[in-house]
Length: 122
Length: 108
Image 1 (tube, rainbow over the protein chains, first blue to last red):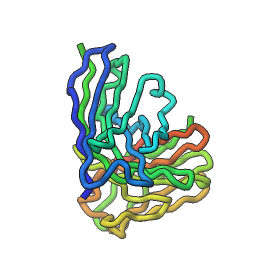
Image 2 (image 1 turned 90 degrees about the vertical axis):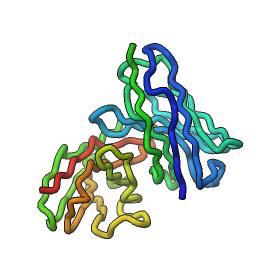
Image 3 (image 1 turned 180 degrees about the vertical axis):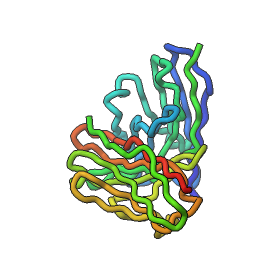
Image 4 (image 1 turned 90 degrees about the horizontal axis):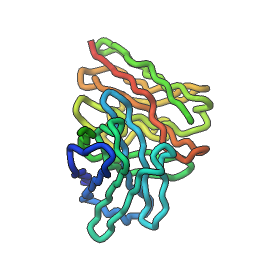
């Protein structure tokens, strides 16, 4: 059974950098065919895709977050991370890590973590 | 950027059929995926590639695409179907994932 579990600070000060980690069990992030990434959901809004990465290094980011976001895959520890810089209140959201299938010109997310709430406030 | 629009809310009686629409320009040329999100939970994939159903998802849920509209249909609606539903596509032009605005399904 594949499980994803996010961890990180619940509260971050504006202008600071957010660092989140997602531990994966029941599957290897080096498995062929799967990308691993992050999606967030602001209060009362729909999900917003942030980006994902393949174990060979291929990656895709949302254009709106590309300049501030960085996703890393730690294959020995079977986990992934997200760094998001220059935070503002607009970054307050639940952050989910997710597994994606990217094939045939489309991508979808078949496994999600429970999510972690990040509040940006002074 | 590519936009997917959904009706904000749908109310349906138990046992009836709910239809949730997702409108996007030329959506028929893209694969559409659907997620169910119950209160306080993470989204869960319920339909992929327009009409595929992951293992464990009820046969009462089905997807279709026609013209500029994708539709998620829930037959014989049950109280447990009450949730937010989001459509999603991959925008090949911008290489990014796009989610719809979401539809809240209320079972009367």
